[in-house]
Amino acid sequence: MDFTLTQEQTQFAEAIRRWTEKDYGFEHRKKIIESPAGVSAEAWAALAELGALALPVPEDQGGFNGSAIDLMVVMQELGRGLVIEPYFSTVCAAEFLKRAKAHFDVLEQIATGEIRLATALHEQQSRHDLSDICMTAEKTTDGYRLNGKKTIVLHGAQADKLIVSARCSGQQRDKSGILLFLVDADAAGITRHDYRTIDGQRAADIVFEQVNIPAMAMLGREDGGWELLDAVSDYGVSLLCSEGIGIMETTIAATLEYLKTRQQFGVPIGKFQVLQHRMADMFMEMEQARSMATLAAVKVSSDSTEERRRTLSAAKARVGQAARYIGQQAVQLHGGMGVTNELPVAHMFKRLTMIELSLGDTDHHLARFVAQPGFKNAA
Image (cartoon, rainbow, N blue to C red; front, side, top):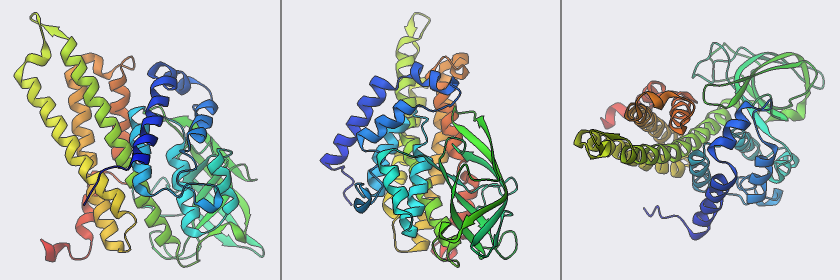
């Protein structure tokens, strides 16, 4: 299989890289993190101008109908730049709308950068199980009434609209009885508590109290909530894997540069063979992870649900292992300075750690991989 990027994909990647290097440098990024909003309106407008926001949107809604491979290219570049804007959360929400074939007006607004979206899928007790839902969706005469709480909603307080999962029937962890809704983030009855995460991103805990929404807010079929949720979460896993590769590349480059300049006993420490071996191990970990991240971007659109789940879990587990190893080694090779906020490598390590934990950690995806049909027979 040919994994060579097209000329258009390469040019797109170069455009985003030029933007991050010129207008989204490390010091500027730190100012955005420390700002009250935690995101930059100027950066969001730049992403819209570059076409990154229109990329995942269908052509009929003013977008480019980009594939998962196209998004892989973008996420790698945003990872290299440690961009903290709500791109990931908005793109995942757009995928819900695309698959549900609904709310085309919202997709148009995403393409132009008019609005930001977030996905409110996690609850305090659910950990990595997105089917563990206590939030209720009670049917009313003209729609639904939502009650419950969502936690760690990435960029939930910065979003204009939310994709929300809720339960209309069944037990707490049943795959059946799950519904998905598009909800205005400022609707009556919604309370958002905004906070900063360890990697500089923003997240929110969101409480829904007697939130009335129209019937048209529901996405997809009444009996297809879990299938839609499962498919889009795998799509999000693919994006995270790609972002992780971009950060790993930058982490290795920064560490190599440090080894060339830091001196001990009158010579650069990069001349010590044991440290050269560590750098070689870090590079091999990254290349193995890159192969799996690329495969994940290819298979996330597979018609076979089993193949998609198996590949995405394998990729997330491998990328998670590489992220942890590369991040830890980079911090150690930098010495005590590796954990200070003055150095970019500390921020890279924190973001890699959050990627490993997001949408299922390594242990979760190893267990999911083993649980797929045919695994025991294949072994």
